[in-house]
Length: 382
Image (tube, rainbow, N blue to C red):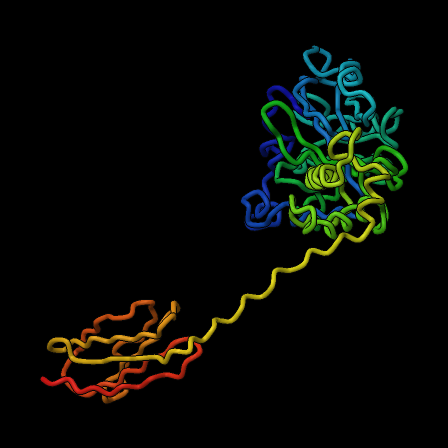
């Protein structure tokens, strides 16, 4: 959680940045060798949230807001975001209370030995099971402590702190024990979290209107349908690029919906929220946009290709080529008597000079679009 002077976890490593073997998955994520978003593919819908010691420091538009219960271990001195202020500033959201829903295990607050008593006695008001929070580097030790006390992993939700980019800790993502939620980034004013939606109750597909924060449970949920329809209309609306079909109504989907609302001249609906009317409009097939006609082939002028080659000065050829009414490129290649290419290029120039390496016999081949090549032989005296 966002603690004022937190530095280390119980293992002795920096909190949220536990030591890991060089080149492990965790190390590669932290050093940008693997992109966290590429690793993040939750099997269950997720909810995004924040926690902070100041309630107004958290951003708007999140699904989960975290606060502190008066009397929670280490927070009795005050100065922290209380649940009462969270309810007042961010009404109608999902919440997580440190002290009632969750125990915060880190130096200076609760210890691993406090975990068993909390899990046995907790009656969480916001989550379906007690939540145990600690740094990812302490995770296995905390899980083992609970297990030795007769508390199986299935009896609580595990919330890890691992500042390695967007992910939920697990063997397949960062290499640490499987978590149900992860505090994946620590900022100056708030920490960023991602929670498995099942932590807060039964998960069902969202209903209309669809809005940011909604997530599909099934592979055919309405958010995926909306994302597919937005992609069908993308070339017609023309204001956004193809969006990922991941069942998560995030800021990219919200922006595309806002452009769709403008395209259909929808009024009276908050920007970025998809109601049933817009969903049905997007379900129609868009009017196909006719592709531009292919470019016409160049018209071959009736005039012939005229090529002139003469020795201008010692070891220099003057080449002229012209077609009346022609505005395209000419291609010219010059070879010596041994077949070595002295010049090979294209240009619009009607006349130009080519320096030669020595005296001798040369072959000049000139052509233009729609014309057969013209070959000229020339002797350059010494």
